[in-house]
Length: 89
Image (cartoon, rainbow, N blue to C red; front, side, top):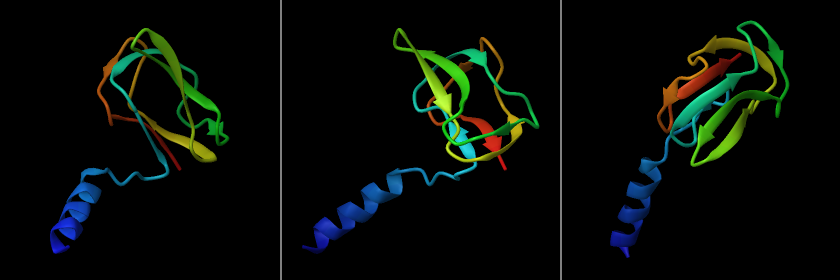
């Protein structure tokens, strides 16, 4: 029984703790378009950029209301999974 508890704790550690103000790439791909600018006020659910991956275009949306503090990407950039794309305060 203690073996199962150890395995659960190990697998829980594999997940990344996400800061609600940071927007991550959920899959590797290419940035097709950036829809916002630094300092722009955004609402939860508003599209921030378009990511092309696996022959599909995916809109990456804001998880929170706030102001765009940092943009770490530009059009045409290739991103990896879990790269921080935006920081919203």
